[in-house]
Image 1 (cartoon, one colour):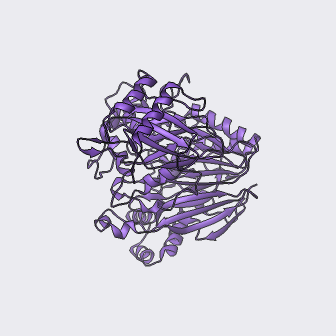
Image 2 (cartoon, helix red, strand yellow):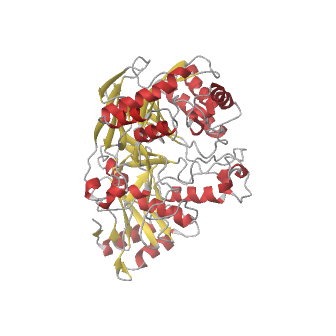
Image 3 (cartoon, one colour):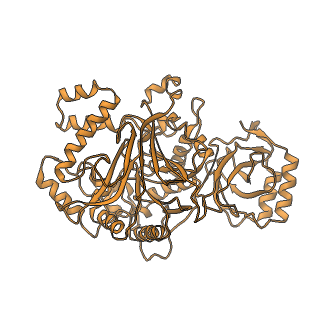
Amino acid sequence: MEGQINLPGVLAAIAVVCSIVGPFERINMRYPTFAAPTICAALMFAPGVTAQGHPISFPNAVAAGDVDSDSAVLWAAVDRPAAVLFEVSRTPGFHFPVRLAFDFVPSPAQPAKADVCGLQPDTRYYYRALVAGRSSLTGTFRTTALPGTQRGLRFGVSGDWRGELAPYPAVRNADQRLDFFVALGDTIYADYPSPAVPLPQASTLAQYRAKHREVYGSRFGLNALGDLRRATAWFATIDDHEVTNDFAGGAPPASDPRFLPSNSPVINGTPLYQRGLRAFVDYNPIGNERYHNTNSARFDGAPRLYRHRRCGDDAALFVLDARSFRDTELPGVSNPNNPAEIFQFLVSAFDTTRTMLGSVQFAQLRQDLLAAQQAGVTWKFLFVPEPIQNLGVIGASDRFEGYAAERTALLSFIVAQGIQNVVFVTADLHGTFVNNLTYSNGPGQAQIATGAFEVITGAVAFDAPLGPSLIEIGALAGLLTPAQVAFYQSLPRAGKDAFVRNLVDSAITPLGYDPLGLEGSPIDATLEAGSYVATHTYGWTEFQVDANDQSLRIITWGIDPYTDAALLNPATVTNRQPAIVQQFVVRPQ
């Protein structure tokens, strides 16, 4: 609940801070024309606890993100223009010492954000936002550990949530046990109608912002994503639906009429992209970083969503933007039974001039990966919004398989440099496939093992999940008979997952790819629950690095899927509790 605070005490504290900013405090303002005294005066003489008779509220709670060993980005949304004071403490009661940071927002559509620095490594902090005598809910985060530390690590990952399917009970059990959570793309669906924007495509900045407010707000008495963002640090990147489906940010606007008119040489310079990205950066607790002096038209001035963090010696994190700098996607394979068409697609995908990550980001990733290995970090987690494992030619244009030369360059670099314990964590498919990763040096050539593997995390809420969607596609393409579909529909969840696994294996093994799963692979893994396929639930994936033996336990949590029609009776959805649908452990190399 939002609570009243001691207004005279707060004003006195603000006055002190405004006169003397301590060595561990940092004032951060979005608008450099405002000086610190101006902000402080605004805080003290802003409208009272009410305006037009309505209490000030924080409709999307608070959040903290981009956390490292000594700093974090704090975030809060308020329902009116306001000067916002962030208060940070090591205790939930906000006893001194505290650190303060400020922001001023001119519109309720634009949340407040501020950096807080001078924090201690591997320490839990509590924070809240203060506006005109009223406090937000309290949030918490933990700073990362310094090199030389192996204390263990626990984090969560998911992506893909549609606005009309809020309030997302699939993540209600992700809480303060986690060191951080990664929002791995499709954090809104700008090109799907939802209650906040009942249009087939958001196009204005106001509409994009409304989409973000929707997913982090309360509905039917539950705000699962808002609660999650309060409970742990948040890292976020985009896929495509933050702007529009299957766009290629490094392509010329003429290749995609949705981005015209524009004078930019690339899509990531067009108004539609920039509105979508501005709203994304506004509504996530991440720094507003941009690329500069790269000598690349694709990168200079574009948002820099690439994040690299080290969590002691347990792990290094690499959060990638696989959408903003990619080349135009290849035409898809229309007939999966035509070997000539398949081979032509594979040849085109191996064009060495085509990129998904872009040269600047790819070079930085390789440098940081090598540094992590040389520093003795155990696990290297690469967060990529689209899958990298070999899943065949259907839908491959949008995955890393559609950029096969760069895929081979990345995986062969990992092998050549002896980079161990690499885990790709991806999303986008709305279901979970786990597989070891192989690559080849050209179409039809032998596959080479890497020692790395991939976990595709399922959707928080996308109707329908991957399993039923694949069956529908297979039936429409004539790959499944009505009798096979009926048999699938008669199976329990585990049987349906097994059916999907066999269906996918039948498509990828003729191409020389390894079947799904880690059995018989170079990965030292033990399955503890479920299978390596989980495609019939909504949920998230938990990663646990053991402090003692550095083993990695991976747990997929899920609930039964639901539709927006089911929310006509909200309790049947909001009462659902996530349960373990898949669990396995991997020993490090």
